[in-house]
Amino acid sequence: MYSKDGENYFIVDAHVALWDARADNQRNIHGKQFIDCFYDYHRNLSPESEVWPYEDFLYQGGERLMRDLFTDGYVDHAIFQPALLSAFYGNGFGQTEEAFALAQKHPDKLTYNHCWDPRFEQAGLDQLRRDAERFDLKGVKLYTAEWQGDSRGYKLDDPWTYKYLEACQELGIRNIHIHKGPTIRPLDRDAFDVADVDKVATDFTDLNFVVEHCGLPRLEDFCWIATQEPNVHAGLAVAMPFIHSRPRYFAQIIGELLYWLDEDRIQFSSDYAIWTPRWLIERFVDFQIPADMTEYAPLTADQKRKILGLNAARMYGIEVPAGLDVAEKAGV
Image (cartoon, rainbow, N blue to C red; front, top):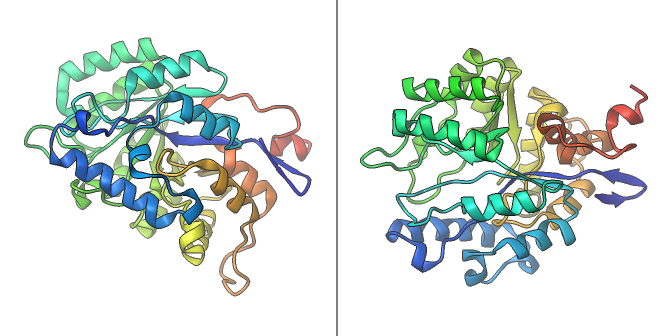
């Protein structure tokens, strides 16, 4: 929990990862390109005091994750959103077994989401059913630009993707997190386009589609989709650190999201380990829309409370301590 000026904030970091990008896990040059691009985001958007040495960035391990998120980072609960990237990493990028074991050890603090790829067709669908039971899945993370064989991405409205989404309905996996954000080398920019979100959100109204990175750099396209599809939510991974490097740009992002979606469909995330949550939470609680940006309303403490944790807690059924929910404060 984070407290400032008499206000308390229950924190859910809705997008974290435990990865291994060390040289011995890199399958090819693309593995190095990918983590180097991540590191450029980390180095260029972070305060100088928060920049890690490159070697530390390649692999953190569970002990450091627990410290960075829960001991030092104010986080009450975090949700793993893994990317497999098996074309680039021998043992995968997101460390499934290590992350799941950590979540089993700390179920009060960690939720493990898994990933699937519709290009594995029936074999992958069978695996999803096994994974749903083993991991007790409430959500999945989709990486539509991931390479698989000769394919350099897939669409959410592909026929096999629909079969997987239908299986998610059947299995009770209601929360579909989708990377729709900035290009990461060597992945292709167009494979992250947000247009396919519109169709699946219409056709699967009982699923939540959390568009990670809120569609950046396609924020306008995302907002026009999300305003008409009430089951589309915005994840703030990658958007958050602009609060430091480009505060007016961040004000535009959060201002547009609040205008089109309102504060009930926006979720905080640090995108750990690209960034750590502590400084992002501190900056966001202190942040206010610049006075001359009059097209946007000022941010309230209750809006920040929802974004920082209450929205994701509601989506995942995470218990919020008495007195910290906005509804309780309002006497609802």
